[in-house]
Picture 1 (cartoon, rainbow, N blue to C red):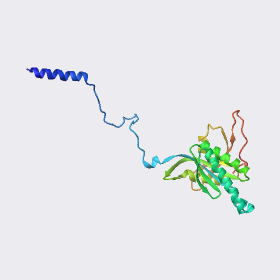
Picture 2: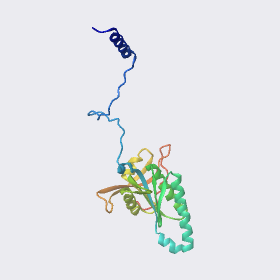
Picture 3: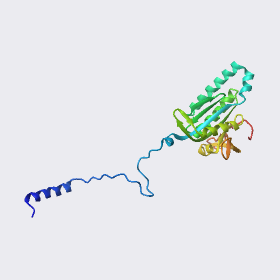
Picture 4: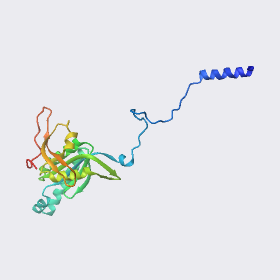
Length: 227
């Protein structure tokens, strides 16, 4: 038989059970099959350093011949003016100049459309200065190592600018797919083998932008019709 003290203690315990809220601590468990895992993901350092980028390569056409024609002083002055213009256009379209390559320049963009627009603007402004350029644009993943960026995307961009005709903006199929809703027009330039890279690469030349009324703006390309 329970004593009076035991009965009172039992009544208190039951009262506590009725008034104290329940609390549960769930230990983390792997997600069930077919269900998303809500635990935060921690990518490996190599994955965290990779991201999508659009690269623009610009190269001055027949720079040696122009240097001979103009002489050192005049050519260097024109070269400085041209490089300043290119850097300004890259900045205007939200890009970043990565490196100057003698008679050319490499820039990166977070948007493929911005890279194409910048390339077309540089080609047009170069002609106004009396300079012919060729440009190559490609999009792909790169990897950051400290302040440096690297990756196959840069090798492809370098191959494209070498294949472009004077005054031409040559892009990869990847770029055309990324800008499919931007109102750009491209012309097929056939399939090409890019040195050191596997497979055939379909290439396209930027030929203009469609206006709001559905018409086409004048082409920026004044080089040969096909590669």
